[in-house]
Length: 320
Image (cartoon, rainbow, N blue to C red; front, side, top):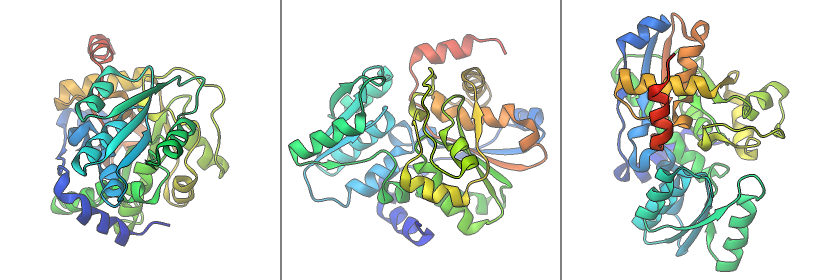
């Protein structure tokens, strides 16, 4: 298990390179949910997502000059940015259908992109082959101790901010793909508030962590269906992340693409925030699962803001 001591050390290591993202709220959101919701706006983080935390924590500790990372987009941007910061050469293995905003983000940090077919090729296998061929360090998107410790710094930051606000959360809603962010955040939160429930939120049909928690074993998604939440389409939880998460997480929650699009629209209109689909699932859960949040102190994590204009525009034009 990863300790709060290790996460605090990671926070000391990366703190000067990242933003302390704000916590905001909406009276209108609280009114319709009947709860007291605070929102951690990590979508305003450097590179547009929490991923920079883990990437900096790992890459700042390696000596090799070359790194390679498999990613749907946000991890790729984070690895490219961290590599530029620490003078590494980064190769990013990204799906050919990755959002344009994420592809452009990687290029802006001088990352080299290798595209793959999300439906027929394995990104980890491709990245591993490049790692062996080029003698570069493989930077996994979630299933690595240093990545989890880095993502856990978000939890440390949340604790500091909520203590200042004298706000003790009854529950925390956080996105979950491979499980790295929520493993780190939940470890930090539970070190401070043992009785706070931390719920993983996933897209409908890609709720492998939810099912894995119910079965107490890692579950593999076999029937792949389309989802706009490109950042959260992990087929199965990470081995290391699930070893942590099965001990400390509360039950999982899944949300539909339509619920996510509603959250994107509400995020823009009520919070003045631009949120990507994967980054909006926790907000979607707070709006759609009223009975879960009603009369409770809730912390919602907005994990990313790298959204393509077509999905953003479609969300804003929808009637709910």
